[in-house]
Image (cartoon, rainbow, N blue to C red; front, side, top):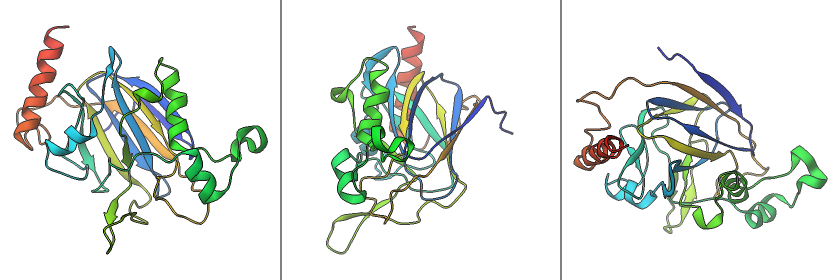
Length: 238
């Protein structure tokens, strides 16, 4: 049973960041359905180490993220493991919305004029959070888009699948390293909904169970076993 240490609802079109220690779980819940939660991961002890989408996908021979997958850093270590997932498909190839995309799709708004009704974009949301840690646009890597599924249409163009995530859908991450987590709840860059979407996501933090020898994520492929070994060596030297 989950013993919650902290709960918070990230409003739609918002952003947030925090440091999460290894041995904790982060459960993300799509409250209303149709959410998109962009996420970046960094090593708080060495901010040059960050989430690496290409390595995460190629070493696990996948195009999607779901239960059993691990999220890799560019040093071959594992930030976190996906230990539970009711959605089944999360994408990490399409990146962020930006100010131009949002203005062209839903009209231009700014905070000075529209206050909380302004229409934030993913790229600028990440920039705001990264600046708190001395980082900027040069430090932004390819991000994860939790709750979003992208597939190819008949012409081979990528499209966002509508209504992919139902209300109450969730994904749970177990953190294998101390991690700086940066997130936003802005629209997916391929979202073409008629009105600007504002979808909240609940964040819940609770203690993780120890990683067993037969752990599903650790043993889902040989590369993950090596990733866990890299983590062990890293913390052995600290």
